[in-house]
Image 1 (cartoon, rainbow, N blue to C red):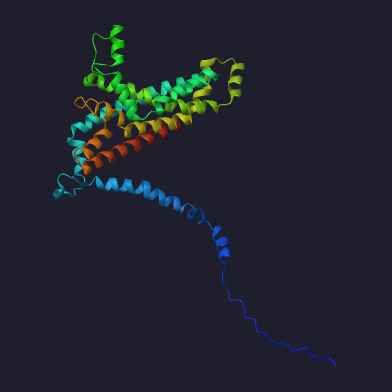
Image 2: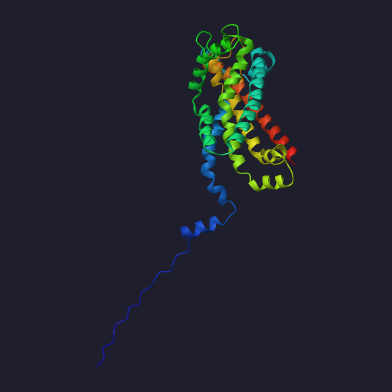
Length: 318
């Protein structure tokens, strides 16, 4: 006799419609806006670190904000710009000094840096050791470099004054930073000493990226060293030159550290620079609104210079 097994009817509920998280992520990643979603954290970081301070500085330039007279603080519109561009003689002197300091400094640093890079590109044990020595001025902090040169050019104990007097180049020790005629040139020489390794390092990297076959082919065609330099080296270095010049101009305009250490803008206004003038207004006179206006004008000048320089360089390359 067979025993029939009992059967049970179990109702299995149907799966409710929905979208799995991984399926949703896969679907979103195929869309056109996925790349923007990935860079969103970086954009937020840039906005917080860069964009917000810039906008705050621009807004500050429209405010009267003096810590010494807080009762008069408030919105004044374009008053700072009117005073800066039409009435402030110190700003005009600082603008002229900045043009000389930055223009002459970048040209001199570029020439010396390129010559040093060409020499170091020869290779060899001596040049490898020399490359370390060349980079020392760039490695030194500005405070250390400024104090070293201040002692070397001291009017009483300066070793350079002693050398110049013994060689007959000077009748007596000279106070280089106390004479309006020599204060700015002396500061530019120190800036040259400290800044040319920046060009040397980047130019050397650009030179080592040039294929030697180009020089060999040019030599076979009868080109001498000078012709190879103008036809191969400079054109191949053009992107590096553009980048280094722009970066160094921005660096010199925005960094008054050497001038602050050596002369503080003096004697008189002989070495006054735009960036130093903004620092003095902010942290000596505590006039942050006027310092903000100076900073905004400097920012606009740098933007115009960069755009024109890149466009002119690109046009000449084409």
